[in-house]
Image (cartoon, rainbow, N blue to C red):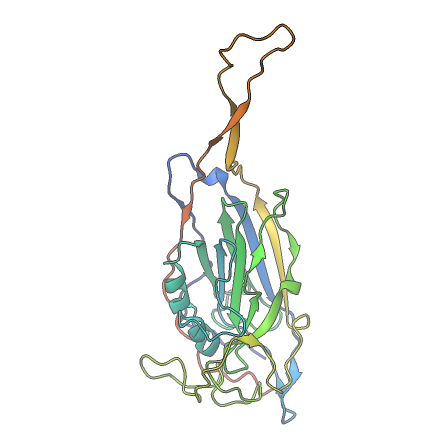
Length: 305
């Protein structure tokens, strides 16, 4: 099956890290490369009517942030900050614009140009890459992409994201696919994956100020459990993270000696100086602003000859 290029989406790999504060430089940051691969087959799974279906994914959004739930919370409604646009249209733009206003977010990136160079949907055998960096040793990573053969399903990290450093400060590296799952955003009534007319890859243009044409659900964000059959995560994607550069992240606090005591020591004791902590500020990064991406175009991946 030939790939259909997406001429509307103009964002490529988003790189950038801007700092505030006078004591920081880019050398302080640890730089990570995240690779998101579509490892599913062609076809990838069978729809409820027996039709062969190819799995595809939309633009990939990645955010480095403080510990805490960033993109969604389980068993609660969508926060209305743009996750529905990503889930229903494959458009990360509104979510990106809202996340950049959060003080918890350090940097945001979007990838929508696969390694093959074709634009738009990530089809089997291709991959997205994101390069993100942080100067925060307690930073977490959250990633999400729309599963375009469904109505409002994303593949994403857990609500809190993934810690980018271990307790001893070692940067995260290796295969992180186990931290991902399919989540139903609960904004639209689900149809059988791969054949629904209101699904991301098949629906037409949506009216202004609407995310989709499908029946509204007003449900809760939760792991997919709608009675339909979906491909497994481990047979659909592989996500790995590598370290491009280990930064010289300043410690939060350092010890400096206080002046020696001025009292006269007794013959049996020798005075010692007791170190007291002094705070060393760590510069924070301002979120990178990325332009809004256009939604995934209408394209049927379900008809395999």
